[in-house]
Structure formats: C-alpha cells, structure tokens
Length: 123
Image 1: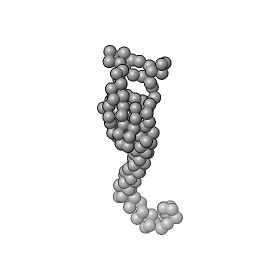
Image 2 (image 1 turned 120 degrees about the vertical axis):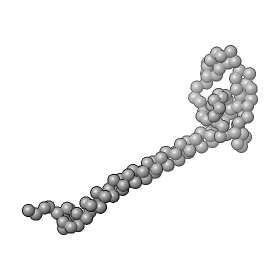
Image 3 (image 1 turned 180 degrees about the horizontal axis):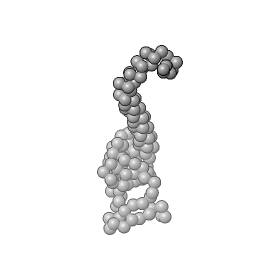
C-alpha cells in the first residue's frame, strides 16, 4: 500500500522533515516563546519608563504627590532636579529629588498630626 506524501513531497523528504521537527520542534517552540516574552517585557518596561518620565516632567507647584518613602505632600516649587514639598498641617517644607516622587495623587486629602483625615477640596 502506498502512503500519502507529506505536502506533496517524496516520502523520503517528508520523513526527514518530520524527523527534524520531532527532534527539534519542542526546542524551537520554547525558544520562540522565550523571545516573544522578552520582546513584550521590554516593550512594557519602556512604556512604564516613558509614563514615569512624563509624570515627573509634569510636576508643578500645587501638585499633590507621594514620595517613594510614602510621604504625602504638596509641591511648593520645582528647581531643576530638586522638588520642594510641604507636608502636614504645619506645612513643613521637605526637599526631594525628582526621582524620589513616586506618583502624583488626585485626591486633595491630607492627614493631621492628631490622625484626622482632612479633605482640602472643600476649602
């Protein structure tokens, strides 16, 4: 009985291709998946870095920020790489580098020394 050739090729060629894929197919698929993961990871990392740079560049007086140390405050001024932040009800002025700012916060909420939460948007 005659077998059907693999993709209209002679049997010897089909067997050679099948043997190659059987031997190296899994390794090729694993390498392709690894390369794809590295490419997508790199793309998302670059996107996050660009978003962070845009956020840092948009710092201006009056922005509510959170530092990498977890301190919440309001930006009073920005000079080159230095950001001045006022913190707490006494408006203590702290100095940070731009890279120490973790995020710009939307809510105008501030905690007092007594532990009360104050919403500054109603002032």
